[in-house]
Length: 269
Length: 267
Ligand SMILES: Nc1ncnc2c1ncn2[C@@H]1O[C@H](COP(=O)(O)OP(=O)(O)OP(=O)(O)O)[C@@H](O)[C@H]1O
Ligand SMILES: [Mg+2]
Image 1: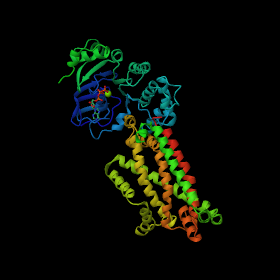
Image 2: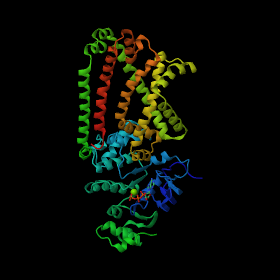
Image 3: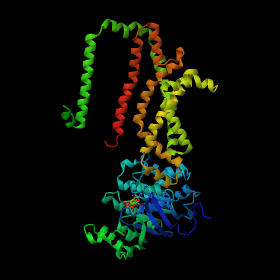
Image 4: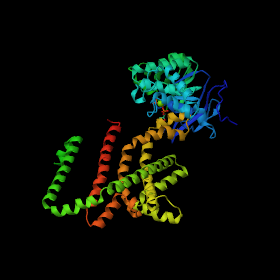
């Protein structure tokens, strides 16, 4: 007997992933992932391109349908065909690498549409909450702008405000700063740091190692569809145990320093 | 010559293409001017007496009806097109129904559909459509328009980035809410130019309503001109009708060009 609706009061871990497999055709992208995220915990997911980080995140709120295994999100069994998917997703914010703001609405409109349509909030209430969240991400002077008129960093902060306007219990970030010019990355990371400090439960796929080390409680290193190593962020990033983690981190932290022998050993099979 | 043409930049090649079509046009006009029997042509095609007899009915009745029928079937047809496109994209049994509907009415001549709606459907189903045979014919035109615009609108829906759908769904919006608030507004914007084109085509296809027959008050441009033609044995009415069609279609075609440039993301 599994639960089909989200339990918002429970203090149980909001994300419980067990034995998660995901294949695209013959291509097995996730090969058995077990991961639990506690209330208020910030977990970073790192790993080379194609290792399945995005797929893992997208399986959490069922943007991708797992092939096998179970995902419990806010107590609801997401792989149950009868789960109240929209009801669960309402309480789980997601931020994409490509922002995905709605171009046919202003920043405010982006933050109001789901409040109005999904939560059925009154216009006044939705406006007040949207305004508050846009202020929170430092965009009080850009509320009436269309996304096309905003910089990438501003667009991503609107996207965060849009997710926050639904009062989420969990936030999922898929490389939120990867599409940004370097000088705009800081603003977005600062907003995410504030969120983490305010106690938000977060799963963050990122290549920003300093963010992972300084802000997140725990870091997961993925490669080839499995979790190769995980641990407290400071330990994992400054003193990785596994060879593959060491090679990856060395390459990311010092991109100019790549030794052929090390590259050869990154392939497990 | 071929080598020279292909060595030109695309814009230059376009210009050469346009110049040569002007050239052909000019040669044609010169030939016509030299060869033609002008007094007879003027009497047959631009006869002021005949024109005066049709004035102002050709505008106040015929052009007005043409616009009325076109706009009515365009609005209703586009709504039907949106419905069919959404059903087709959603898939399932209703999706198959939409595909069947679209292919059926794209596959048979519009004239037949209009004829069927004007005369066969009212008898077969014993229904009375407001406006009689013409009204029923307009329904036929609506159905044809629905089938054609459905494919245009579907292409617009599919041109919206999948990230839009994912963002909306991740906020808890249902697939219906996502379609209505997020996908359709963007998809419809993308297809404004081809939909305007469709309007131009429809304006011309409204002439097919002649098959429904018409009362004096319900004639559209082509029916009006044809009837005047047989009454006066003179082609001036046809020329006037053609000019009135152009009066509407040329600015619209020009507008499509402008819109395509403005909405082109590469510019
Ligand atoms: N919708 C899909 N259909 C088919 N294959 C897919 C799909 N999405 C992802 N994949 C494949 O799954 C693998 C893992 O992709 P994923 O996007 O999860 O990697 P990632 O770790 O997020 O990489 P990156 O750092 O480049 O974003 C890749 O080989 C990719 O080609
Ligand atoms: Mg990814």
